[in-house]
Image (cartoon, rainbow, N blue to C red; front, side, top):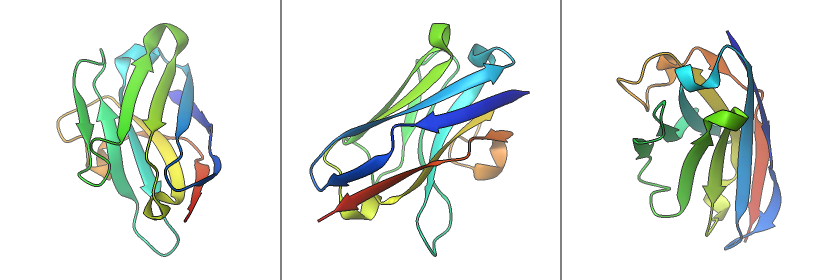
Length: 124
């Protein structure tokens, strides 16, 4: 199995940028398909972005496409989410997740392991 720890969240103003990191330990990081999800108060968890094992394929929710970029460094066992042009509606707890499969990247039940999440708050 793999353990995931997110970092990099915080409070920013609309238009600012943040970079989230997700550090993995345990089973080799490169064997996992990785995803980012977020959950705002009173709302369902929603898909944000995902990246394939080698980083060649990336997937984004329409709401973040063109503003967010996910990447990974398998040598450092780390997943990243660069968030630019942040909006108040991006406010949520962001979590990274790992899956041995990659056939439906936005499907929350695809993922086997989850981090504890990091809070991102965007003020207007």
